[in-house]
Image 1 (cartoon, rainbow, N blue to C red):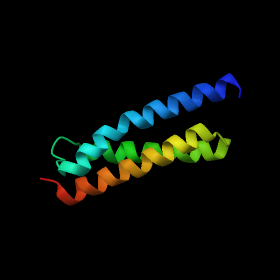
Image 2 (image 1 turned 90 degrees about the horizontal axis):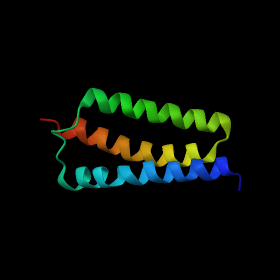
Image 3 (image 1 turned 180 degrees about the vertical axis):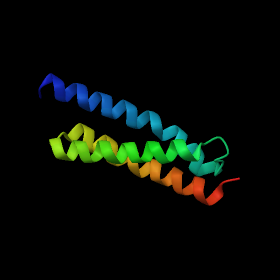
Image 4 (image 1 turned 90 degrees about the vertical axis):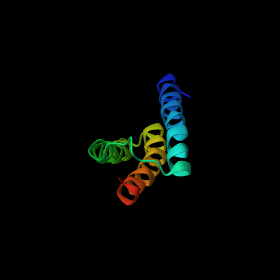
Length: 85
């Protein structure tokens, strides 16, 4: 596997896995008081655009990482809209 793909998969793995603990905590506690709605809307849209970019390039590290992160971000965004203070 070329070094650029290894770097991409490593970066994708680390950034996606680092997001999981916060998503898990939010899902478990349903505490969304510390989450900015405008930031999470922008973040989720940005992740969706990264996913589309990865698909356009056929860059699977970008596609896989952003598909997983998008699912987590959408889950948190839905919770923020549903349980907001």
